[in-house]
Image 1 (spheres, rainbow, N blue to C red):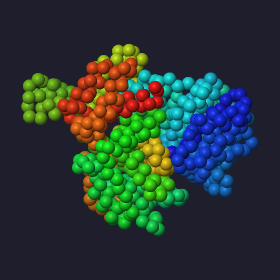
Image 2: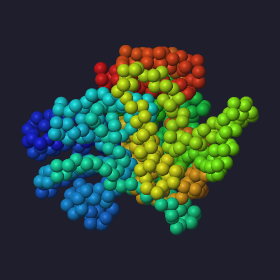
Image 3: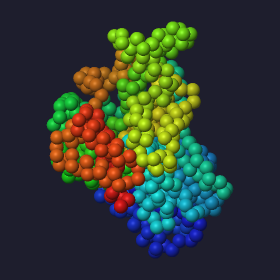
Image 4: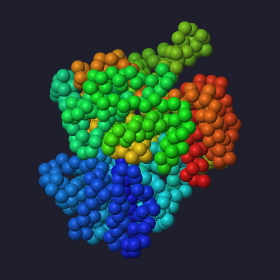
Length: 610
């Protein structure tokens, strides 16, 4: 992520005081120098290197951060001759707001037309470059961090109770909301625009899941690998580049392609754990050996959590409950120590090509609706609901299957959500619940699920994960941890061309009852070792729950953070006591996730608010 910030005010600015304020908004990062820009009623702070592009022409000012690509020749020519921001001015003058649809790559964009009293804020298709904003007292505040806005003396930031509920539901706070009232973050491919006295927001791009490719399976598989290779090549053009290597399909493919494109052995970085269930370092080593990379590894111990937890958690300016942030930080830190400037991440492959088991599980549930409705409603279901049926072998499982199958998508995806399996009054205080809509998270899931036009249920689930899993969770995790380590990150799997290609591949080629990511595995057959292609999905999971049960200093740190929440107005105190008891007496790995969520919320509130 590329840092930037600023504000737009209806009143003329004093340049000296504006510059001083800008410097307080965004502390200088480890890996970028910063520069300020003040012009009449606009103040900006951004990086002073190739990751930030500023242009002025006539009454128009444009700032583009990241790695933008203009796809049409006239704009691409201007971008190469001057910079991408200059091309944005030309495109805006020609086609107005539609200029956003011509811009590809990873970017955030701010445009201000003083003469027309118009501003535009936008992020890329996948929101790899975060954009926060607030409209307050006739001023626009914006930046790559919520803290950029919070640090401005004229902004307004009060904690949002709904956001705290959403955090427990999603394990993060999904866009467009934030932890603060009236402060928002852009969703993927979203823009906000003020023009002719009117404020509006919308999406300049949405996927077209056509499933109508005229290519054969072999041709599609070949195109996947060649398109991804082009994406890795584009990401490998500046700085010293390395890659995350977990040993999974995506990181192994990206690392392998980077190795092919590099004159020297590619630098790859992996994290291991001294807990067998969580450790897949052998697959990372297999990929490193296969592609002859310069492999670097770090094994995380419980003491690493103790020494770095506070630094990692405060690296997020909102509560963020994904415990794999800590391994991501150690991996990025390791890369920084070995001279890498830019890391390539493999995020996105599972969401483009259907690599999560929940997609396969929904196929099984949807099969139930192939049975004629009358037979289901008048024969099967009345029998299954009889008390004696549950006593039969597999009777309980049959009842559960039918019950879940009759729950429509996307609601069915949330069946096992902790907040659906427990009463709100069991978890939260009555006063807190008066200020919260407990149905809002599910309504937002339903809205996102229905957003694509003419898409089947597999494609809708993929799109939902583009938003919830990638843009709101995995990308902020990797972005923030790389930023904290002083390193940039790029996402070749989320290249626009590869995303577009994935949308025309039939869902049946991506996932079926017997295989996840079928067409992708066909694409990398012969490129990756078979052991990696055929392995089960893993990731950067942290054995926190297991460690915390027996490692006393770690347990003390966690429980003290949870105890802090007892004095806050959000939770039923009995729930917090029970959470610790369930962790001690029950399934430590399962309840460890809850302990991490509560510990993180308590630590974040104590650090950022008090």
